[in-house]
Image 1 (cartoon, rainbow, N blue to C red):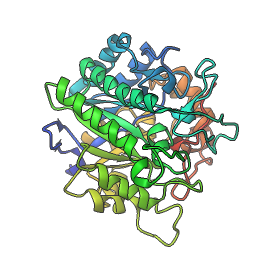
Image 2 (spheres, rainbow, N blue to C red):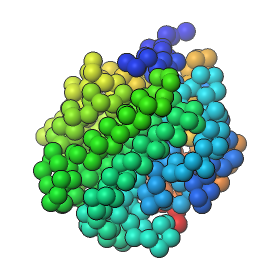
Image 3 (cartoon, rainbow, N blue to C red):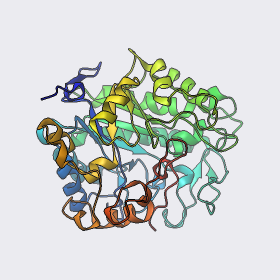
Length: 396
């Protein structure tokens, strides 16, 4: 049987050991209760996929009520969420899989309907380009910025108390952390905006607060990861050099950096003359300093090997874990022929995919799921932003 490097153990600098180099990427289930509490359907979904990957990163959880981005979203905003979050961490821990809670504030990606009449907030009062009917948010004042930073810390405390092994700060897909760094959404003139260095201040403050929380409350190795989108396509907006600069500022402050993109083969979307893959370019800034998680339409062992050869230390797999919950176990048994790379609508209940998520996959991710009833519809996001990079239509 072929020995595969990605099935070997990996140790983070803080001492946390994971059983392999495979990460189940955070994916939206839209299945939590209206108030953000976990549901049995969600627990069953994660239980079906636990035990294989070294890490499972949950779908995103909001750190505050006004940070909710869509219906059916998990919340870590209140201590009342702790019993459900504790169940979630326990379910993921099956057979040694580590549990990471992804946390965020949606910022201007929310709307007043989701926030029950409250106007969404952001760095500045500038509406997002997508969707076209995005509401103009209210600019946060200084005390509110500090409050959100505190809420990230409190969310981390709850993750620790619930038994998670780490948190991932969702600084990608045009949510609030990214909104503060982007000139497209941050045109403030105070200490939180203006120059690139000032736009960096908010995410750095969140990282600092989260790290202080970990030091204060965690009695075991607890990792802090950061997810980043390599580029924006809006003008003005984040360009590759901005993201590489960002990584240089945080790489000694976090335990891993996780890219967000639809294809691991992607090169720059804005500079077509730059033919080097994004993973390779980021790895030149992270190598031997901080682990890099590569991602993007990874489906086969060959894909994993290619991502690692390009410079990633760990490899995140998303949609393939929806189609094939036992992906790792089947590779361990050398049972490659039975691995699903297509998904039948008739099998979604058997795969423990919650009913609301089934609708979401059909309506918002049809072109990337490889459904057996229309296998001709398969989009390649090597040279374009994918729906999951902040462009997907959430169910209302």
